[in-house]
Length: 83
Image 1 (cartoon, rainbow, N blue to C red):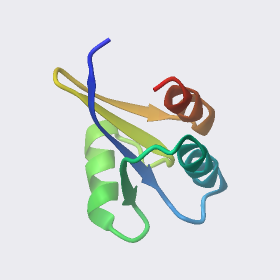
Image 2: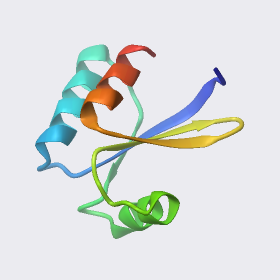
Image 3: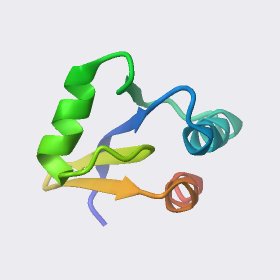
Protein backbone atom coordinates (compact mmCIF):
# COMPACT_ATOMS: atom_id res chain seq x y z
CA UNK A 1 0.00 0.00 0.00
CA UNK A 2 1.36 3.42 -0.96
CA UNK A 3 2.02 5.93 1.80
CA UNK A 4 -0.85 8.37 2.30
CA UNK A 5 0.31 11.93 1.72
CA UNK A 6 -2.95 13.75 2.35
CA UNK A 7 -6.50 13.06 3.46
CA UNK A 8 -9.44 15.43 3.01
CA UNK A 9 -13.03 14.92 4.12
CA UNK A 10 -15.70 16.45 1.92
CA UNK A 11 -18.70 16.97 4.19
CA UNK A 12 -21.70 19.07 5.19
CA UNK A 13 -21.97 20.07 8.86
CA UNK A 14 -25.66 19.14 9.17
CA UNK A 15 -25.24 15.65 7.68
CA UNK A 16 -25.56 12.94 10.38
CA UNK A 17 -23.33 10.55 8.42
CA UNK A 18 -20.66 13.25 8.20
CA UNK A 19 -20.96 13.82 11.94
CA UNK A 20 -20.35 10.09 12.49
CA UNK A 21 -17.07 10.33 10.54
CA UNK A 22 -16.07 13.52 12.37
CA UNK A 23 -16.65 11.82 15.76
CA UNK A 24 -14.38 8.93 14.76
CA UNK A 25 -11.77 11.42 13.53
CA UNK A 26 -11.87 13.23 16.87
CA UNK A 27 -11.92 10.00 18.93
CA UNK A 28 -8.80 8.81 17.09
CA UNK A 29 -7.10 12.21 17.35
CA UNK A 30 -6.60 12.43 13.59
CA UNK A 31 -5.87 15.65 11.74
CA UNK A 32 -6.80 16.13 8.09
CA UNK A 33 -8.33 18.68 5.77
CA UNK A 34 -12.04 19.41 6.13
CA UNK A 35 -13.81 20.57 2.99
CA UNK A 36 -17.28 21.94 3.80
CA UNK A 37 -19.16 21.57 0.52
CA UNK A 38 -22.15 23.52 1.89
CA UNK A 39 -20.04 26.60 2.71
CA UNK A 40 -17.67 26.44 -0.27
CA UNK A 41 -19.04 25.46 -3.67
CA UNK A 42 -15.50 25.01 -5.02
CA UNK A 43 -15.13 21.90 -2.87
CA UNK A 44 -18.39 20.50 -4.20
CA UNK A 45 -17.38 21.28 -7.79
CA UNK A 46 -13.99 19.58 -7.32
CA UNK A 47 -15.65 16.47 -5.93
CA UNK A 48 -18.22 16.28 -8.73
CA UNK A 49 -15.54 16.85 -11.39
CA UNK A 50 -13.46 13.99 -9.96
CA UNK A 51 -16.19 11.49 -9.09
CA UNK A 52 -19.40 12.55 -10.81
CA UNK A 53 -21.13 12.54 -7.41
CA UNK A 54 -21.82 15.17 -4.77
CA UNK A 55 -22.68 12.71 -2.02
CA UNK A 56 -21.12 13.33 1.39
CA UNK A 57 -19.26 12.22 3.37
CA UNK A 58 -16.50 11.57 0.89
CA UNK A 59 -12.87 10.98 1.80
CA UNK A 60 -10.18 12.01 -0.69
CA UNK A 61 -7.04 9.94 -0.15
CA UNK A 62 -3.92 11.19 -1.91
CA UNK A 63 -0.77 9.09 -2.25
CA UNK A 64 2.34 9.73 -4.31
CA UNK A 65 0.88 7.64 -7.13
CA UNK A 66 -2.87 8.07 -6.97
CA UNK A 67 -5.96 9.84 -5.68
CA UNK A 68 -8.85 7.73 -4.40
CA UNK A 69 -12.29 8.88 -3.33
CA UNK A 70 -14.12 6.85 -0.69
CA UNK A 71 -17.84 7.06 0.04
CA UNK A 72 -20.04 5.54 2.76
CA UNK A 73 -19.53 6.66 6.34
CA UNK A 74 -19.04 3.11 7.64
CA UNK A 75 -16.29 2.41 5.11
CA UNK A 76 -14.63 5.75 5.85
CA UNK A 77 -14.71 5.11 9.62
CA UNK A 78 -13.15 1.65 9.18
CA UNK A 79 -10.45 3.11 6.93
CA UNK A 80 -9.64 5.80 9.50
CA UNK A 81 -9.43 3.23 12.30
CA UNK A 82 -6.84 1.35 10.25
CA UNK A 83 -4.49 4.33 9.89
